[in-house]
Length: 279
Image 1 (tube, rainbow, N blue to C red):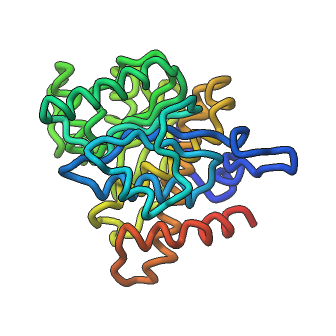
Image 2: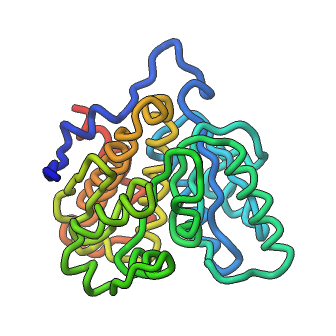
């Protein structure tokens, strides 16, 4: 499979520019099931990053009393369920069992996720849903998470083996799980059955808590704005995922300037990163 090197020019094709005829519901609605009592910040980071990346509506499906945190950071977020054009699920949610009440909430939202068969991004605690959904699905693991997921499906592989040959394992996982795979690393790869994309080497300053949640929010927003294109051609899900990773690193480079950054500071530079790409 030929590797495509992803560039700002490629990204520009995936960023939907609104016209004078657009309104909030025509610009894409993202449903987010993110964060938990254990990791409440993930709910804030995913939603705030998605809003900063640009979309029409974000619906946050609250659990563990996180709505007030999300609304404090991004008051434009809607905390009532409703129709969505894409899902972002799992960031900041542990795969381990929660209390009975929280487990019930998760099942309720996950049932809604399956019922609204729209493009879906699975992160962190939702990775086990890979290959179990009828809709176009993207998973966003790092090497350790992918190794664990594949081991559960009967494929013996270590995180060290995946780290040694990420291209091979991104493609293998995509074929085995029948999903699009964004394998995070210093060099990120996106693969499905037909496409393998290589992102530019990322700044090492991105290795900071919450960075992956920001990435998930960025990708979720772009998936929501491109949902029709993805439903028409699932290869567009790989292109959108690569665009999200490129924007993530671009914002990190602007925020860092060769110095430490936080996940929140990456979000602050998303508009500038997008402006540079769209020029």
